[in-house]
Structure formats: C-alpha cells, structure tokens
Image (tube, rainbow, N blue to C red; front, side, top):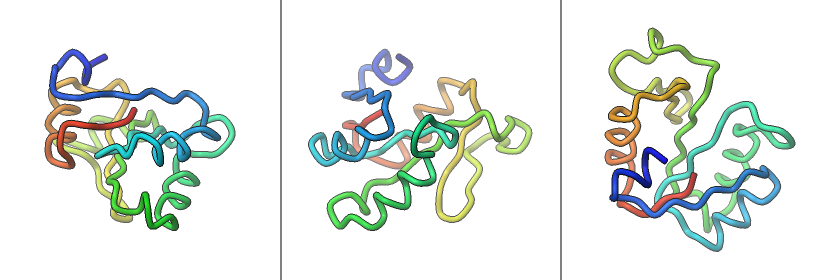
Length: 109
C-alpha cells in the first residue's frame, strides 16, 4: 500500500513463493520485494534462483524482514552479500527512497 499510495509505482503482489518467479518473468519488474522468511521457498532461495535465470538476474531484490532491526539498518538499508535489507515494519519514507534508488517506477511486491 505504501508504494501504491505514493503514486509512483505499479505493484504486483504475489503471496505464494512458488508463483513469484513465474510472475516476475511475466511482469518484468524493476525491483522484487521479498521477505527472508516465507512459506515454501525462502526469499533467499528465490533470490538465488532469480540470479541463475538470465531473464531475471538483472532485477534488483530488496528484502523486507523482521530478522533485522532498525538499529542494525540505521538510516538506510542493511547490505549483505550484494542484497539490501529493510526491517519490518518498514518506515514508508525509507521504503520509497530505497526503491527510488534501485529502479524505475514499475515493480513487484
């Protein structure tokens, strides 16, 4: 809702990890938002699979997760292994600024 309400992004929501990559292939988002801890495949598993697919590897991934705290991330995303992580609940302004820094205004959540 944060991204949709900003008026800057077209958002596709996929709530099943098994459908995430096929949906990304169809939608071709500018950014994928994933949770680290998801039912079925984890966000890390999806990120690894996307990195192996030439049609998806160019898409930046942003993890929204309860596994990092605002204290760990400070005023921006935590970066690890080339991936960016934001804590949940996410600060709306920080989410929009991070997405703005990653991609043009077409994305997938």
